[in-house]
Length: 302
Image 1 (tube, rainbow, N blue to C red):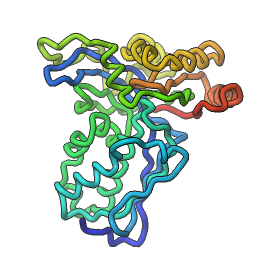
Image 2: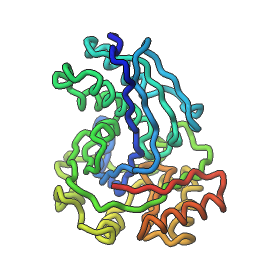
Image 3: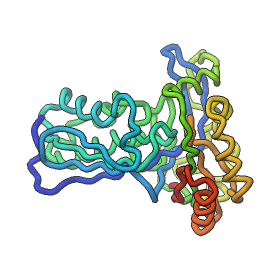
Image 4: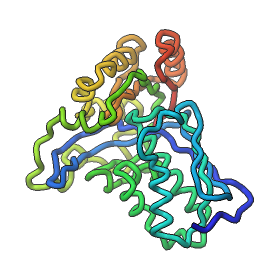
C-alpha cells in the first residue's frame, strides 16, 4: 500500500440506502435472488468515513461502532484495493458509525462504498484506470448502488443500475426497534420467503418496464402511490423473523399518520413517508418520547 501524501484528510458520508420498493423475482441457479428495487438515499443522518495519511488501518467509533460483528466491509474494500491496484495511495480510515448495524439500510455497504469514493478522490491521476464498480460488486451486492450514491433502479442481484435524474424528495422517518436480531437475519428472511427458482432467468423485471429515467411521477403523492403498488416482498418473512417490525410499521402509519410505512430491505428498519418535513420531525419526536430505546431519525429520501 502506498500512503496518502496529502496533508488534508478526505471525508465521505455513507448515507442510509433505503429500498422504497423491493420485488423478489425468483431464486437463480447460483443461489442468489433476482430482484428489482427502487432505491433512494437519506439525507439527515449518515456514517462518516475519513481517509487520511498514516499507516493503513481502521479505527471505529460512534454510537454503533461496537455493534459491528464479523467482517468489516471497509477492511474487505481496503484489502481488495491493495491486491488489485497496489499503485493506489491508501491510508488510515476512521469510521464514525452513526447507523444501526444489520438494519436493512446498507450501512456496511455504504461504508465500503464511501471508502472507494475517498480513495478515488485521493488518486485523481489513477482514478480513470480503475474499475470501481467492478470492485464494488466483489465487495457486496449493495455496494455498487451505494457507490453510485443516488436514487436508482437496482436489478439483477444489485449489479444492474439505472440512475434516476430526479426523484420527488420524500420527508420521512426511519425507525428501528433495536431488538436483537439473528446473526443470519437476512438469510432467515430469504428462507422464509421461499422464492421459486427462476426458469428461464428474468430479462427485464415486469414491475419496472414502464420506469423512465425521470422517475415514477413528479410529486410525493405520485411516488407514494408507486411505492404502495410495488411494496416489499420481504416484509412478511421479515416480520416472521423479527416480530417487532410490525410494531414499528404500525407506529408510523397508524399512530403518527404516515402517508405509508414500509420495510427497507430485509429490515428491521422501516420508513414512514410524510406530507411535510415538519410532520416528519414531529413524528420522530413523538416516537422517541414513546419508545426511547428505538432508533428514529427524520430524513429526506431522494
